[in-house]
Length: 367
Image 1: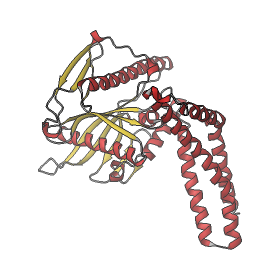
Image 2: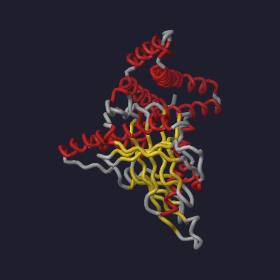
Image 3: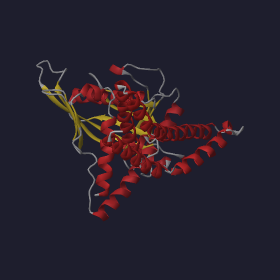
Image 4: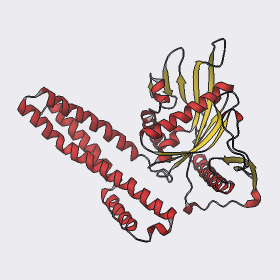
């Protein structure tokens, strides 16, 4: 075997070994066995919510175990592929082995990023809110573009996505949208998207064809679980009900089923209009409010730690720039990762940006 190829395979094996150690395969197998035992109980579905949690966790952990053991098996088989190609002096077989090595390098690097997600809430589902900021109708259109970008990203990975509330702008686009992404480590992964996104393009809404810069804000919080104990006093809430509306302000239904909750002490406002009844919408809105209050508490705790370390946080600053004119580029302004294909990024190809953001965050925390 070529010495460079042999050295590369050894390097990949060492990286995978460190990932296996961090993920603790024995503990992962034990967790899978325990969840399989719970899933097999005949009374499991007496508690629907608990049953869904168990089956979801089992599916995720089985997937993780299959992924890492599958990579190890393929990596162990790789030297044999090269030996067979050399013995047969088969150029096509050699190319196949090289392609498999390149795929393994990419998949192992992606899995390595998962091991960097070790925050308290990183394993949880994510609750994402997008808001149009400066830029008028272009900002509202950009906010809708971002909503589609995250939706396409979720679809590409077969992740669940549920939109709780969309506030449509008058001319085009959206004022805001809130949605949940259900996936392993959704919060840890998407939390690096938090901040201000900037779009530069020729405005399709300007009849003089001028270049326009617009902004949209992205907020990401972990979904609340039953163990979080976020208490909300009913006296601190203002509840408003109204009719759901669609694009252009048209009514979606004829009853006041949509619900808006205002948490008076903090000024946090959430709404939900996707459920059939006012009661369901209020319950969903309460979950969203709890998640935002939980994140507020986490940020306050983080601020205290940052003050002790004398290091501020950069959340909320511009974090990514999408340039469609006069040239084509998307650039992360924190770690300088950039690509020259904005249409692919806006179609959901953001994994490279997510991985670069996670690596940048880990380095920043260590620094």
